[in-house]
Length: 110
Length: 120
Image (cartoon, rainbow over all chains, first blue to last red; front, side, top):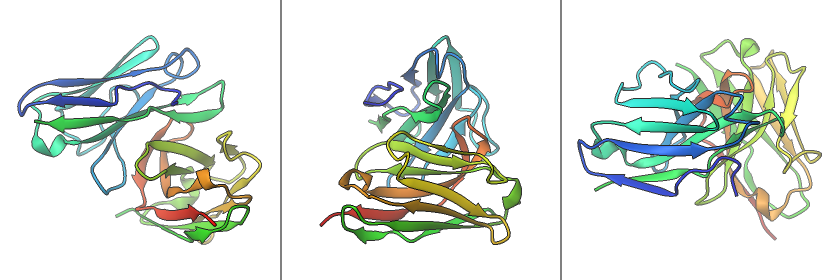
């Protein structure tokens, strides 16, 4: 079981808006920033969102992140077929003194 | 362009040892904190270890503490992971990653990974 909890799957149709949740605790999300990764099949993960809601250069503004209390969310608007991938949240856990990841959410574009 | 190239993976018996290497280029390596992240076949991401830019601070996941050692050679732009007392559950693709911000769980560059298989 992962320290951060994500739904195992999510889906949407092209053009739709989907959100993926990430639930943690006071020792990780509650007191530290959240990051999101996209992993396309057979490739290394890619940083999508850092510091809760910041996009690295080159990441489309269709991707956005938010955090409230001990939970965070990734939103993808105007869904594209190429967004079909696994998405992971991550944060530092001050109690474990470790980086913790969510179990990942497989996004299917119908 | 930043490139991280892992090597050293392979098949090893339970209880054995392996040393992974990561060659970095296209970045100021001596100013970059680095981490190892692994992914078991068909499973999610698991952070393994991190090291500060100078090498003076190291951190480990509980699952590898006491068995794995992270180190770096800034003169060679190299990151290492010495893995001892390997177990079947250590079987995974091991990624070398550059920390965007140290100890925040943000990694902005990743290698393609090197596969470690622990089996008799």
